[in-house]
Length: 292
Ligand code: UTP
Image (cartoon, rainbow, N blue to C red):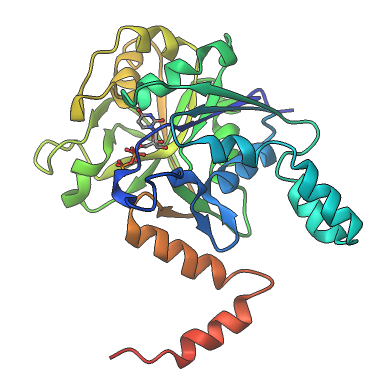
């Protein structure tokens, strides 16, 4: 059994890059093919053995709470109409052994602050953080967070998911550097939030998957505002590194940045092309699509 039982989903950001779509609904409820982004992330956590799902929500996020609630009327109606397969789909959003907790971040003060808001539901155990707008797909292999749980079990230290990016894009990410330890695994010696290409210590970017020891919560309590005037999780991890070993894990799989319009469209196209029900019809559509 995995020692990581709690997954935190910080979903209280403003989602400004998707306005006006995100004026009244959460960015994490935008759908990729037939599921909201948040559900891809919660399924990834549940498949990796996590049972406590902690959602840090803000205003306009009530649809997320509803999505993880029992839908009595809908379920009764589907049962009456003998739509058993659909009923199963609806009920499996929250498998029966899963507990969901919702915590409000009243002001979007940053990702680090959102994680600290989850403290009452985390306790004194290591936990995972998944940012649902990074949709990571590894169709025939273990999910990104599963791979990272496996690293945690071996190393017993915090692990951050990383990916190689063009150095010109370093200003969009936390960037890490450190010596390689094994295939895909490095030690983190240097970690900077949103550096310029000149300041970036490497081309390794932090993506939205973390396994963190509870010591991060003590650090976050005193972390000051950083890049973008927000309390940054990256800054807290850089501080934690002075006390504990931190590992960077270059995951296997394809990441879609669904916080950006292009990444979101790419996810829809590529996941549709691998979807059991609709791949063939969609391929046919693309084949016949005439582009000028
Ligand atoms: P982003 O940097 O993507 O910010 O947050 P955002 O507000 O969601 O989107 P844009 O940039 O305005 O379009 C990364 C993750 O951290 C969460 C977001 O919900 C997202 O999952 N977050 C960010 C919080 O939960 N609280 C915050 O104060 C900031």
